[in-house]
Structures are given as structure tokens and as C-alpha cells.
Length: 446
Ligand code: EPU
Picture 1 (cartoon, rainbow, N blue to C red):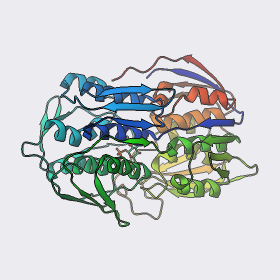
Picture 2: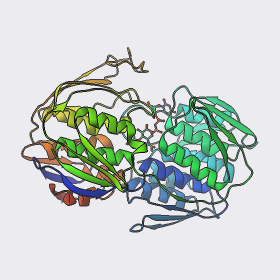
Picture 3: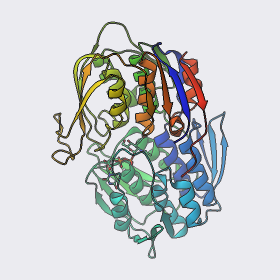
Picture 4: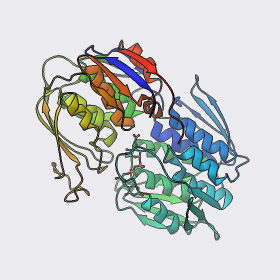
């Protein structure tokens, strides 16, 4: 992993930064454009590596992609969609899990799709069994081959009834992207209802789809014969906003996150307040700051929306090392999302991880040897260290820890942060962080 950053910690982050569209929506809206017969336009698009990866994958499939990086606007024209070479998909896709979502749209457009080995963050097994079961349920034929998985739909795709074992974000998106142009009705039970999914549904509706969402996690889709393009502005990245908020708290700082929106962050804001953080919601963003005094320990469980997002967990845990007392964190979305705490312990944090479910929610990982609960005892001063970034959110947490610590830390593999945090170096500098990029080499696409 490449990129080395030195961080002279111990100074509060203060100032203003802007967040643009959500990584976990933008990439899906880009895939949705494949379903349209006309061009689409997506605004508020951040310049991050995951967007570049999906843009390259779309280009491989014959889509014309024009990205105005400063203006944050993507033009996507899928008129000449075509099959891509297996080796090319493999070369571009290794760092992303998005290719699995190309299946439905490609089956509709071309009658076949290919999925290489999938990348993404190392935060658990991250299987694709739900996705394959869903595609089969629509009538697709799934053929596992040496280079990857070949999927075809010799008799077309037909609407179906699906009940997810768990409200998976990706599986819900898979169903939506496949059902909108399948023949007849599709009913999806136990669906994920994250704001990014609602925004994807809004995009699909603009394209001509008929989709309803019930309060009991049931989504119904009436297939239509054709879809057009869309014009849409992406919702803000609530994970990035929460990450900077946690950074402000852990460093005793004061950060205005322009573009952050309240409705999608309600659960985060409640937790932030319980920990002792202060915030002020404005029309154009949210200001987050440490109001002085002690931070409070809390009991926290991650969950699917409207619960506390798993992606907020890692940055907030760094702030919890500065809270007075014992905090308990139960991770119920991924079985292996506490690996990043090793480095925090090395910096002086007192964090124990447990296999037991330390929380009230029943969780899939209990009694299964997964270290998915943590007890954080604080406050503990953090000291500088040499750190290797493990994954996107864990990496940002390490960055926060280095910013909060006394002394100069060396953070390696920092380029992974570019996957999901736009211009994080520029933002750190805007917040008066004392950071220096020693080696900015970009990690090669794997
Ligand atoms: N799962 C299965 N089988 C499947 C699919 C999922 O068992 O076929 C399990 C996963 O292993 C996990 C749980 O279901 O334990 C939830 O996974 P989900 O499908 O909801 O996650 P995802 O769609 O792969 C997206 C985001 C993640 C975010 C999760 C949860 C994208 C590209 N990724 O992943 O974001 O953590 O939803 O909200 O949208 C990140 O941004 O750093 C990130 C990891």
C-alpha cells in the first residue's frame, strides 16, 4: 500500500470543509445509467477513486463518461453499451465491489454479465451469496468459472418474490437494478432502507421506474419495458460528514462541514450529543465542536438504517478513547471491524475486544468466534506512532488518532483514503492540521 503522511498531532482541527455527494450512492447511480436509453447527468459528484473506478468500468462497457471534476458533474451516455473483455474487467475492478451491481443492467442490455474477484475493504468475509441468489430468482443462470462468475439470462428476467436474510444494502440495490426492467412485479422483503437507497430509488423513478417502499422494509417494483436517462443531484456523504465530526471531537476542534444534512444524520447527531459533542445545524451544513469539559462514555450498537451506521463506528471510537469511563461498542453489521483498534492500542488507547455480543441487539455474530464487541476505557492520552492504514474507514480513524496524539506520527498506505474522502489533504490543511505528504504515490489499481 503506498503513500506516506507525517502528522504532527495535538492541535485542534478548526475551520470549514465541504462534503459533496455520497460515495455509496454516486457509484450506484452511475451503474443505474446503464439501464437508460438516453444520457444521464449526475451532479454533486466527489473526486474520489471509487468514482474513477466505476467510470472506467462503465467506459469498458461502451458508456461515454465525461467527468467535470471541478464542477462535480458526470455525463453518462449508455447508447453504445457493449460487452467488455474479461481480463479488462478484472484489471479495473479489483479494488471495488461495484461490478456485482452491473449484473442486472448488463443482463437487460446485453443478455450476459461477468463478475471478477471482488475487492473492497477487508472488514469481514463480504460474501456475494445474496446477490447470486437474487439474480437466480429473476431467472438468471449463474456459472462459476476459473476467471470469475459468468451470468446469463437466456429467457430474459422475470419479476419475483425475495426475502433477504439480512437487510443488505448491496442486495437491495441488486434487486432494484434488476427488477426495474424485469417482466412483471417484484416484491422485496426485509430490504435495506438507507438514505442512499432512497436516493437510488429517486433516480430510478426519474428514469421511468415504478417503485414503492413500505414502512415494514418491503419494496415493490413494477417492471417497465424501457427507461430513459436522469438528471439528479447526489445526496451528501453522511459518512464523510460523520468522520470529520469525530475528528473535530477527538482533537478538541471546531469544524463546519458545509453540505452535511440533518435528516440523514439524525442517529449520528444523537450519539454525538450523548458523547458530549456540540453541533449546530444550519441551512448550508452542520458545525461540530468539542465544547470543553469531559466527554461521556456511551453504549453504542451499529445497525442498518435507521440505526447507527457501521461506517461511523471507527472514527467515533477514536473520540471515545477520550471519553471518561467505559464505552461499549457492539458491531452488528460486519463481523471483523475492530482490526483497526490494534494501532490505537499501540498509541496508548485502552480497548479490549470480545467475541460476546455486548449489547441488547440480537446479532448474527454471537457465539461464532468473531471479535465484534469492544470496550473502550478512557480518557487515555494518545501518543504518536508509525501506522499502516488497514482499510478506508479504519484508515481515517488512524488519521484522527494521529491528529489527536502528541508527537509526530507516520501514516503509511494513506492513498487508500482517496477511495472515499475527496481531497482529504486539502481539507486537513484547511483545518490547520500539521500534515506533510512524504510520498504521495497512488496505489495501483489491483
Ligand atoms: N452480506 C452477506 N451476503 C451478501 C451480501 C452481504 O452475507 O451477499 C452481509 C455482509 O457480509 C455484511 C452485511 O451483509 O455482514 C451487510 O452488507 P451490505 O450488503 O449491507 O454491505 P455492502 O452493500 O457490501 C455497503 C457499503 C459499505 C457499508 C455497507 C453497510 C458500498 C459500496 N458499500 O456495502 O460501505 O458499510 O453497505 O452500510 O455501498 C464504506 O463505505 O467504507 C463501506 C464499507
